[in-house]
Image (tube, rainbow, N blue to C red; front, top):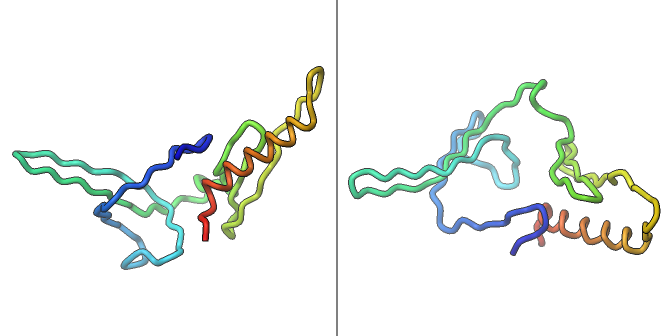
Length: 122
């Protein structure tokens, strides 16, 4: 399934190696900042593929407050420090040919696509 602005994939049956700073193992529901890398090694008839996640501490100068997690044509969505999402409207250019109904339905569709990629169904 492809949603506008996202490439959604599911990696099946993967080996994940973690390098965490404070926790011994990843905790359920906790978000970690870092880099996820896909490692593939092919040597002398030996094939090894796994993923490595390395937790990184970002310095305050590098860590952007309320990062954009979705940038679309009509809206952007930022994630606040408490994990909630905030939709923001992009500038509206009205003029000849501007149709309010088309604009409103386009914004609604984009909001559905964006939140569908960010929020998991329960």
